[in-house]
Image (cartoon, rainbow over all chains, first blue to last red; front, side, top):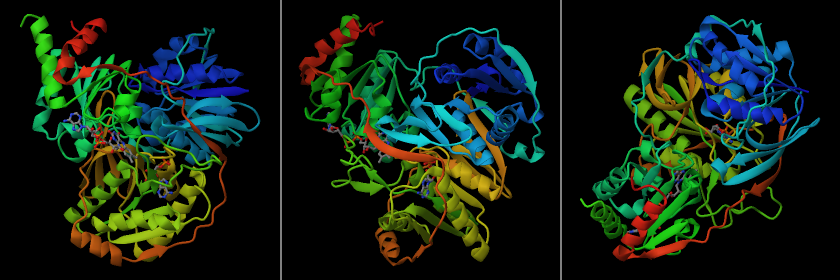
Length: 318
Length: 255
Ligand SMILES: Cc1cc2nc3c(=O)[nH]c(=O)nc-3n(C[C@H](O)[C@H](O)[C@H](O)COP(=O)(O)OP(=O)(O)OC[C@H]3O[C@@H](n4cnc5c(N)ncnc54)[C@H](O)[C@@H]3O)c2cc1C
Ligand SMILES: Nc1ncnc2c1ncn2[C@@H]1O[C@H](COP(=O)(O)O)[C@@H](O)[C@H]1O
C-alpha cells in the first residue's frame, strides 16, 4: 500500500497539522509519501522525512505562490493520477478539508472528512467526527483511491526518521484557476487570541447585556486572559462572533475556562471541552455546564465575578 | 441578481445528543429542528445582497418532506422561492447529495436563468462533510471558496473574505461563483409578523432527484467518549471568592 500525504503550509511555514497527517498515514501500513505544493514549501522536506515521508514530491508552479483551493485541489488530483497512491491523507483543518474536497470532486471519488480511526483493507471502515465532535459515525469507504482527512488534534505527531528522497512533480494548471488564489492578505495583529489564550472568561445569556461584560473583561485582564461567549450572546448582538466558543465558533484549550452564566449546550461544550480545567459560575446547580465542570460556584455571576477580581487585587496588595 | 442558498434540516439538540436504538439516526422524539448557523447566515447574506442589488433569492434543500419547515423559515426572512428535493430514506451520502443538488440547479437555471451566486454553509451541522458546496461548484464549473466571512459584489467580481490563522485572506472570484459562508459574516434577522404570513403562502416546488449512491456509506452513529467529572463545589455566592483565588494560585494562573 502507498499513502500520499498532502502537506499544509502557509507561504512556506509548515502547519503542525501536517505532521499529524503524516503520523496518521504511517499507522495505515505501507509506504508514506508527502506532497508539497509551491516552491516555498521545499524547505520542509527534512522535517517531513523526519516524520516518515520516504519521498517528498515537490510541485512548483506560478499559481502555487499562495494558497488557492482550486489550484491546490487540481494539483492533488494530478498527483493522484501520476502517482496512483492507494490513499491520500491530509489533516482536517479548514484548508485540509477544502483541498481534499476539491481533489475529490475533480477525481469523482468519495472523500471522508475528520476521521479519528481508520481500519484499512479493501473497503475501509472508518470512525469520523460528527456534530463538531459531540457524536461519532462509523462508515465504510469504497474507492480505488481513498481520500480522507484526520480530525485535527486526534493524533499526536511523532517522528519516524527516513532518508527521504526529494522528487519534482510537474502539474499542468489552467491559468483560469488564478480566480481562487488569495489576492490580498491583512496580517493578524500579534497578541493572545481566543484559540491560544491560557485563560478564558466566558459569558453566556446569564450576563444579560453587552455592558454587563465589563466585570468579565476586568477579571480576564487581571489574569492575562481573554473573554469568550456563547452563541446566545452573539445572537443578541452583545459581542462579536469572533468571541464565540463552540461548534460554529472557536475551539479553546486554555489552562482554565471560567464559564459564567452559560448552560453548557452540547454545541458550546464541544468548543470548550479541550480546556484543561473548567470552572462554572451559575445560579442553577443542575446546569449541564455545572455538572460537567471540574469546579463550580453556585451564585449570581454579577456578584461572584467582581468578588473574585477584588480578592485577587487584595492578595496582590493592590 | 439571482442568489441561491442550499440549507439542510437538522435536529437541534440541547445538553446531549441521543441516538435511536438502531444507531441510524439522532433520536428526535423531543427535539426541534433547525439548520446550521452557517446556513442561517448564508440565507441572511443572500437576502441582504438582493436588498442591495435587486433580484431574487431562492432556497433549496434535499431532505425529508418536513424540511419544508426550514425552507419556509428562509421565506419568512426574505427568500422569494423554495425548492425541495424530497428523499424518503435516511441522509444521502455527500457525492449523491451534491450530484442531486447540482442537477436541480442546472434545471432551474435552464428555465429561469443563471444564479450569480450559489451560497452554502461552511459545513452541515450534523454530518460536517466539508464538501457538498465544493462538489456542486465543480459540477457547475464555477469557482468556490469556503469559510467566507465577508461578501462584496463589485460588478462582475465578488470579493470574499476569509479568516485564516495568519490573517484575513481576500479572494476575488468572477461571477457566477459559489461561496461557503461562516457564522459571523452577519447577524441573521428574526422573521417579522408579515414575513411569517408570507412564508405560509409561498409555493414550495418539489423536484424529484434520482442519482446513484457514492462510495461513503454510514454503518452506525456512536456516542463520543465522555469523561465523567466529579464537580468540586467551591462555594456559593461571593463567599466562594477566596476558594476560587486559591484555585487560581494552585493552577499557577496568579502571576
Ligand atoms: C448547529 C448548532 C450550532 C451551535 N453552535 C454553537 C456555538 O458554537 N457556541 C454556542 O455557545 N452555542 C452554539 N449553539 C447554540 C446552543 O445550542 C445554545 O443555544 C447556546 O449555547 C446557549 O447559550 P447560553 O448557555 O449562553 O444560554 P442559555 O442556555 O440560556 O443559558 C443561560 C445560563 O445562564 C444561567 N444564568 C442566568 N442568570 C445568571 C446569573 N445572574 N448568574 C449566573 N448564572 C446565570 C442560567 O442558569 C443558564 O444556565 C449552536 C446550536 C446549533 C443548533
Ligand atoms: N441535504 C442537503 N440539502 C441542501 N444543502 C445541503 C445538504 N447537505 C449539505 N448541504 C449544504 O452543503 C453545506 C456543506 O455540507 P457538508 O458537506 O455536509 O458539510 C451545508 O452547509 C449546506 O449548505
